[in-house]
Image 1 (cartoon, rainbow, N blue to C red):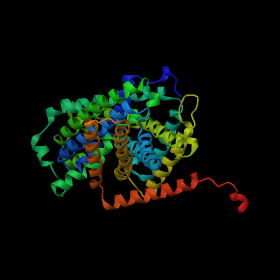
Image 2: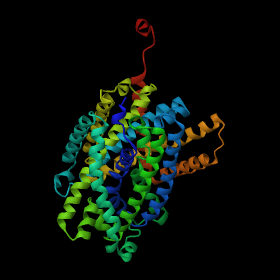
Image 3: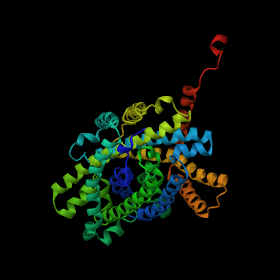
Length: 437
């Protein structure tokens, strides 16, 4: 257990959720959405509304449960769902973690063009995975300090873009960028759902790390909703203004979108370069937060017998050290697969984002069901809870519509393989079986 002196207070908890969301989500958004066009503003508003209700699910869960993490909530619904949630949530997050590093390195590609090569990109990602695994073993205090500094610098660039960028906003340019995908309006709006949902993955980061938070019953709900509001406003303002500053094609070919906007706002190429470095560092640093969250979620599943007991081990700093190492190995394998596919930055990011989002939708859905079940068991007749869960569930189910058939089949295959492998690993021989053999 982490000592009280090392636990995060309200400000630290808010930074944790903002860094989880803004660190990786916002910097990749403009380029990803530009392939569709500024019509994704509609997608943004729809996904933000849905994500708000999902956020409220975890706010409610923080008030109702001792452990409001997705894996614990799914286990409360059913041990079988708890087991599946452990697989989906932990490994969905591990794949997402890889995409975080890829997004950050995209901002460094302007200085190191070799990062556009799949092999060099893969080696760099793997090296960073292990550097941050080792750094995370020191405890949440180190993580909080690193993330607080870098995310503060990142937010300055995003805020400047979202405020000062409107001076360079051209309504005609925004209109020209409206739908460049060539698809119908309905399909274009849905096409932006996956990356937008990914940008809000992390609303449960405080709940997942509640053992690292001082007075979690009070702080978790407040930090969750405040962090969400901060990030949602920044997302919409900054990405919308960029769509009116540059042609869609220019945004698509510029991984460092905010460096591009800062360069135009300031009229200085140097400012753009500095912004690119800052955004990259902030994004990569947020990997530390999610690395810790993934290990924490795995520990919950391991405590319930759904993952190997090694995930339950904690070191003297209160960190799930063996889990971090195991996850580091798995993320390394994921990146090796991407390398074998010859994936560059854009392709690798798209693949990892889509798969991770589809996997995470399952435990998010079950988290809402846990709240309804709790109300039924306690005899609570909360209309507000039912509305929150209903709307968040509709949002999560509709999110599958943004995936292609190939992506859905890939996720189904991945789920079958992972569950099959772990069923064999966790199966213990029956007493006397060796003798009978």
